[in-house]
Length: 231
Image (cartoon, rainbow, N blue to C red):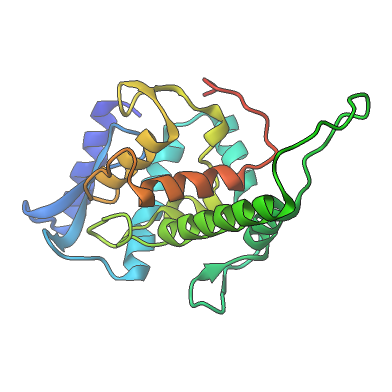
């Protein structure tokens, strides 16, 4: 979308809703457009339903900036099953639970033409490591669904734009991203989203919350071939 067209759309929004100059503005997912949220003042948090509505508007701007084929690819990744409440009170889907189960239970394939190699790891070692890995990914799932956990200030969380980590494509990083104007890692883009659409502060590179979200996103694409640099 051209800069001129973006400004025209925003002007219509301001005229239609009477947006005040001190309303909060956020950077959109296309990395260029800016959206002012009518009635949202600095320090205020959007109610959940309004936050989802705003996140949907952000994704519509992103959709207009993408080729039709890219939008079709993204839409095909959207979860087809409803989100259910988990016993712990968080959100869950059967597809997410299946991903987590596969992550823990799936054996590592061994080529038939290679004899088994001795290992210094015991079954107990593997069990402990898998338990820690599972907990780490579950923490990432919770943080992915929480605006507060990532430091967002207006009530928008990652899952509102990326249900079940859809359209995140961790297998394509590192790659040059126009939003950051440099070659980015997945965690760089997570931080970009925290700082812009979510109006928070970027997390330190080794922050456990940031790392857990990165781990969850990567686990959701388990089995997809690496394709660094793909756009």
